[in-house]
Image (cartoon, rainbow, N blue to C red; front, side, top):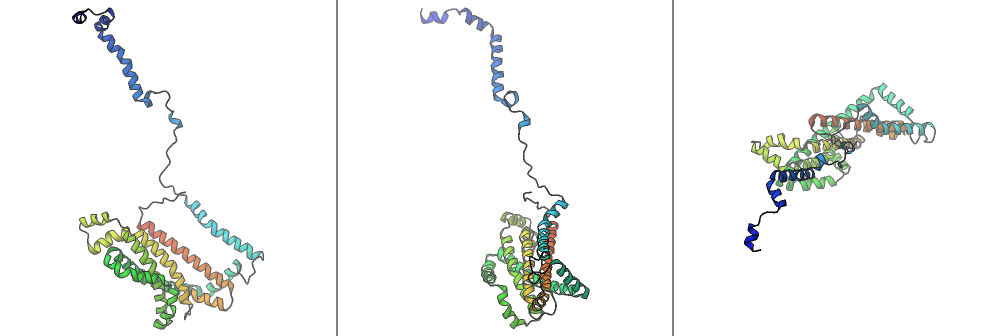
Length: 320
């Protein structure tokens, strides 16, 4: 058969049936389309998909705060254990009284100071000296830290001197300050101020340098410049570092307070430590240590309160 005959040959019965029934062909293609659709979406139609009950729920990423009673119990657990061990050691005779006075003797010494009114006077004198010293030293350190953090020229002028000053222990300056200021109140306040200036400068400088440059540029775009930029943007952004510096300054001021009140003082907690050492009263020595510990705890609680008021947007991300 020639090519023309093949082209003009009639269709076979099978071909004719297929050509004569296009609807059947369309209907035959429908299951394939359904099959491909089922393959394309196995989650909706596949029977092998895992049931929803077996999926692991996502972890909660927010902050869960403990109840106040539970948090307080956890905080005081270790101090109470230390007090219990101290009480048992001194009460059982394992620790001699001349080595460490017992809680009863310390409470007796506290009662003596309260009865005579000396405790209140000593606390007020120490608080006044520490407050003035931290206010002066912290203010100077904050100012220098902000200037050095904002300006390259300020950093070149201030930072080397502050780093050298930070490397010198402030207790090494006691003889020099005595020759300059004597042993009166000025010497004590200046010594505490020098001790508080270094941590405030270091943390303030770090906080100012950590401010996002885009935030500063955005504030300048809204017209904030000079002191308004520093007080409105830079200081609030660096506030976490500044508050941490304040916490350290207050703690360091207690060390400077002991050294200052042991020289030429007639009142104060440091003066009480000197008296206890002279008369070998271990109960007064332990009492002074506990007073400093309580003062440090109160300082920490006060700074935490300021942080919550000044920075309410900061969430607690510590693992519980």
